Image 1: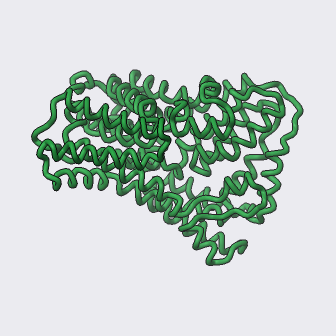
Image 2 (image 1 turned 90 degrees about the horizontal axis):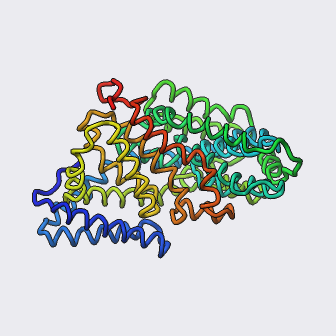
Image 3 (image 1 turned 60 degrees about the horizontal axis):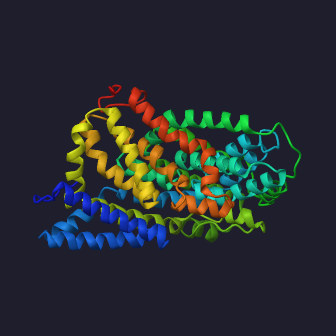
Length: 464
């Protein structure tokens, strides 16, 4: 991170400015319901005025913002390639084929557990928790209502599965953001997350299985209709799974993320030409504008109409503004002064990870936005992790465990509001049953205090 200015603010002043900035962003997002870009841009303007009032040159202010953006260029490039990959996987039928197989597993017995598994699968292949909840989740909640099952537990299973998928998918923007902001390879980040994510997944699956009814007869019409519509697309083929298998192999071989995505895009695009369901122009347009599903099934079309570089521009714009904000907060000395104040109590791995998790959770509740909780927390604690010799992949994992998944549990959070609206279940109703989202921060803090799977920069296990 860039060096901050020499005339650093006092602790009370830095705290006051940060509270003002976060309160303003939270007010815009929660009360005014604006897109996050606007309050972040306003916060940048306020900080620029604050910096000029302290006689900081505009050149230094500009350098602070640009240095923040430079640290996230890797993430921005990955977002572009991910948009292309999603478009190519849809034209090649990869996503449709995986989903077709996944839908075959849903039965009335162990309903909650299977709903969790189905949404987890869809979350991984789609890379978006909100898209999964708004499509597959809506179908499952409708089936649950027909069967007379608990809406709260069903919604909890949907949210848990969707956020597992979002967290572990290489197509997820939050996963890429967390790895890029602390400069950790995407697939190394995902592998390291498995230490906390897999236990949370298994425990959640057991809990949903225990809570599931022994078996009730009910129509699975909504999901059967989705499956039938998928079968009629003409892109369900065994060879459509080649891109997925290739991705797994390249991850196991530890091929760099960008190269893995690039090769996968080429292979997927070639497969799209082979099965000939789309013309060459439509296939190439899908790489930029995204794939447009025309199956005739409204729910399926909503799920599959996505991808392309253009679909990532909202996220890219938000990341650029957020990185600028983080860079300026550092340049003006606001975050460094506050970290210096608390650094005396953050001399161990356990305390550092615990504080990181609380910060990410606190930002989710303060401003209701998961991107900013990842970006600001990641920017704030990078140097502290280096200082005590913790590998940055510990930080990226904590950002996801306590930043990404918590947003769905915040009633005024972006994810919480969206999910409650599309599922028709209030956030506080499904919150006690969103087991995966509740377990993730608990496990990451627990592992921090025990030292399990916490790696130092020298490769050794961290001391508590």
